Image 1 (cartoon, rainbow over the protein chains, first blue to last red):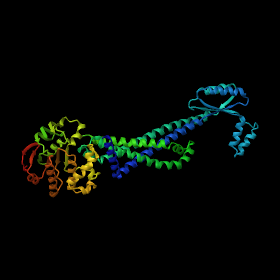
Image 2 (cartoon, rainbow over the protein chains, first blue to last red):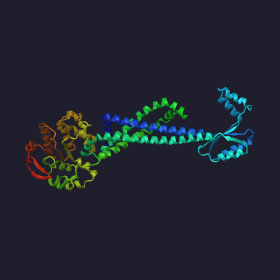
Image 3 (cartoon, rainbow over the protein chains, first blue to last red):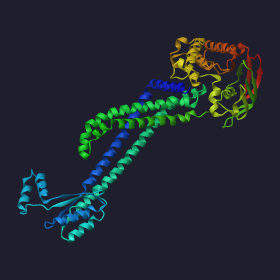
Image 4 (spheres, chains in turn purple, red):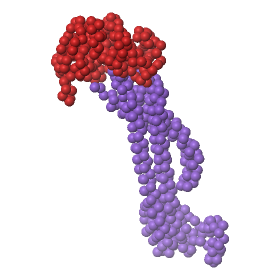
Amino acid sequence: MFLVDFSRIIRSGLRSFVRNGWLTVAAIGMMVITLMIISFFAILSLLIAQGSDIVKKKADMSIYFKANATNEQVIQFEDALKNDSSVYKISFTSSEKAVADYREMYKLRPKLLDALENSGSNSLPSSVQVEFYDPEKQGNIASIINEFKTKNIVDRPSYEGQKKAVVDKIVKVAGVTKKAGWALASVFAAISLIIIFNTVRLAIFARREEIEIMQLVGATNWFIRGPFVFEGAIYGFIGTIVSVAIMYPLFAVFSPSISQFFGIANIFNFLKLNLWSVLMAEFLLGTLIGILSSFFAIRKYLRLA
Amino acid sequence: MIYFEKVTKEYPNGTTALKDINLHIKPKEFVTIVGTSGAGKSTLVKCIYLDDKPTHGKIFVGGVDLTNLKKSDVPFLRRKIGVVFQEYKLLPQKTIYENVSFALEAAGMPTKEIKNRVPKILQLVGLSSKADNFPNELSGGEQQRVGIARAVVGQPKILIADEPTGNLDPKNAWEIIELLLKINQYGTTVVMTTHNREIVNAIKKRVITINQGRVAKDQEVGRYAI
């Protein structure tokens, strides 16, 4: 009994999907646009989130040792830093490595290399680089540095004064952008949901008389609703396929340059690796939107006189 | 078969469509309900197939008290009453065959039984060749015959026809009336509203005249007189 009804509902939904013609095309078109907007903004937010994390990570701090600092003192200072809970990672750069890095960095600009030679000492100070979990929270680092500064072991940190102000600003902007990205994504998702709901509502409005007729010949509400809801599910299913078919090649082409620009992982690779989960997520989202839209849009016309 | 007990219908805007109607329609009867536009004919039959509800009074159809019926029971009652409408009310996106089979599918009838019944009923109304056409490809008379096929395919005890010839020319109108008479002969109670004087006078059946929401006349072999 249930199976018979179910197969009748499915067949009826398929038939009306095919016969609806332009209304079907319009509804699927809306579904495709909705899914693409949601995916686009979801990915954009992901990018911004990743990008701002990277900016934050890059806001590390270099502290230079005085030339007369002993190995023991260096280790003592490093330990003091390591013990602070705000510190994510520290790494030591020796004087020799600093010179080598400098040579490597400026090998195409001999004048700057000459400057090093001409400074007489032919050396750069050794230093320690500090990365924080969150550059905005630096625990007791400032007081630790001050303590060792008075002991004449370290110099001023790079991350101070003007530079600190700039980095702080970047970190702040990144945070705001991240929030704005999510907000924008939610707003656009909401707008496109309203639009798709209205499209389905219009499609059902055009067929409200059919609903009335079906009621008059003794169909139960769920027997009437079934085919419409199934049709909504088909909109979602086809909408998913079309939107992925459009987005996949777009990402294949543009993703490398985008990732380079933001300095983040290649989105296309992410998409390729997770193709099935992305497809499933889109499919679930699209079908759910289609089903819910139909379900609620038809409710109004199912009220009995 | 159908009882009306002191049925009154008032619309929220204050108009009274039916006033204190008492009626008894017996099984296998062919009843014609006549009256001017707005007299309340349509409201009266709508109350039988639950497209409308009386504000006072009681209606019994086949022993069931309609005024106490739960909303969820409405579809099941409607399956026992066939309805033919003036404006046909066919499903535009379904073929003639599907229009007729829909009511049976909705009622959960086995597919085998549906495949057996629908062609027979289409043959009865003379539309076997149009089974795969859509309603808008048919003439008015043909569409109304589909309406009748749909109404009787479930073998209801009662057939309501609300101005079934209202949109048809005399020739087509007569074909419809003849179909209804034939169905009545098979044992179905038929309740028809109409404006058509010639038809009422020719068929010599019971005529109930409604005037301003009241039963003005009720004659066993009636004539159209308003």
